[in-house]
Image 1: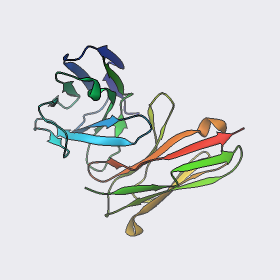
Image 2 (image 1 turned 180 degrees about the vertical axis):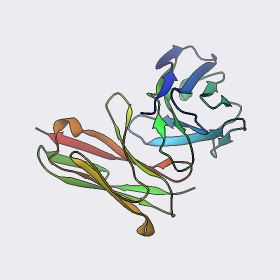
Image 3 (image 1 turned 135 degrees about the vertical axis):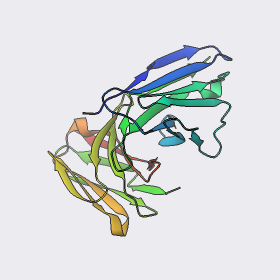
Length: 115
Length: 105
């Protein structure tokens, strides 16, 4: 089956640090990748959608300069949280999809804790 | 974007009972998936079901796209079924608020 690998699984760092999260589709080409954020006991909130080779489309209220998304190849997307602060602490999870009418496949998520 | 609503928000069952979870969506869609999120946060893909009916063991799902809803059936529930069930729909795959299922022994 389709596998999406997300790294790191856990990050603890100081306020002001930039953190990069990688999302890789291991056995299929991901035309579209999605980044979500989940706070405790809440649902997944879509942050942005990225298509390979194009700029990401951000949801309203998500700061583009704060959450940098790169989708440089059909198997890799990265999310960089720049100058992270404690309020950025959350569970970030990526997903990847081949064609439009195919299912999404999720990574295992990254727990980000900013001290 | 599309609006996705799930019901009920919480469900408590005795082991062995059956249950039905519902997902309503605000617009016609070509994509709909059901997921189970385990206590470690992993999203387990249960069904990709933009229309029709599928079954996998004790779980089955039905989507009636023309009426903009999908149902997830869990039969003979087990304690390991506990967790949060999400549906996601639309081209940009928006999630509902989830149903938190607790199965008691």
